[in-house]
Image (cartoon, rainbow, N blue to C red; front, side, top):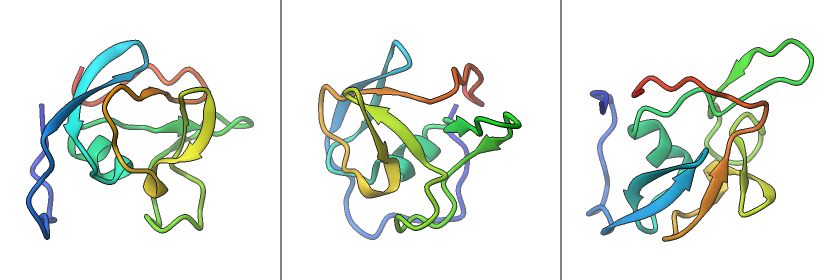
Length: 102
């Protein structure tokens, strides 16, 4: 289920491509900002903190806060600094199992 967001696209979305998120297929827009595309798809939280387990989602969207860390093809990266590409394998740290769209 996609949420109504208080944002709009500045350009035309890319063609849909399939990525793998936590073992399941998900369609996102090719070339889109990964953090924005995941949020638009209703995916949250992105990770949990190691000490308290508190949920974290993208905050700054410019690479300063590290709240959007995900593992992409085996490498921990900031989702807000990554473009969507077909075939990406993404996992969320801390065994995050809930999403708003499940």
